[in-house]
Image (cartoon, rainbow, N blue to C red; front, top):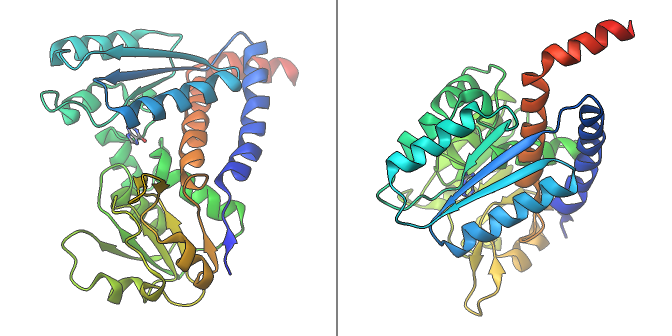
Length: 293
Ligand code: GUN
């Protein structure tokens, strides 16, 4: 019977310390600000965006949502991002993905100022992450690493199997594990005999978006199972990429869906926005530090 990696509980603890830092910054006249841009009417995206906004407000951050119909042109979206790049009250810019097909995600993400890329998806952020430099890390992989760190689970020397190769989750997750000295295997939709790989894993990250794909007999005893999936099962109930009920009996640790990785993603977005606000006001902060000496 597995230990539950409770993303809500861990998030609450991390958000407590973020909240203290937000209050400190506000006393100095700086309110961390996040701008979220949502295009079209993807229902899941709307839900995620609302959760991000609520989390911001609860921490006393400034949060502003720009919602546009699907008919928005690329020029208009690029102009909005440019305006936010120049807005000093905004420290983080998040363009919710997926974008409607006529808008180039690559082009839009590249237009975000890297110092405001709290999503960690800009090629400069990714390049810095790949080379182990300080940067904003993509929120979901970052949240996974924080969760493991919080539970004192070392990944060094462990065999980590990542199932899914998206730019948002799978690819960067593998990099972060590699940086912490894990051995990483990437699997994806074209991998043959997936279970041959997952059965050899000490840690499995499921991020393919296939309801209950990972079953009990696909893992070894005592594996750690991280479920990034967000699907509906045959009864319309929210479920992950893991067959939770059976896998939890065999694994050492498991993340539930909902209440696992999801809350951690939002927490790391708050964390990145706070860091960005601190960085962009380092002049004020260093002056205070000098005065306090
Ligand atoms: N869509 C689903 N997850 C994410 C995320 O973390 N960032 C953005 N921008 N879009 C998403």
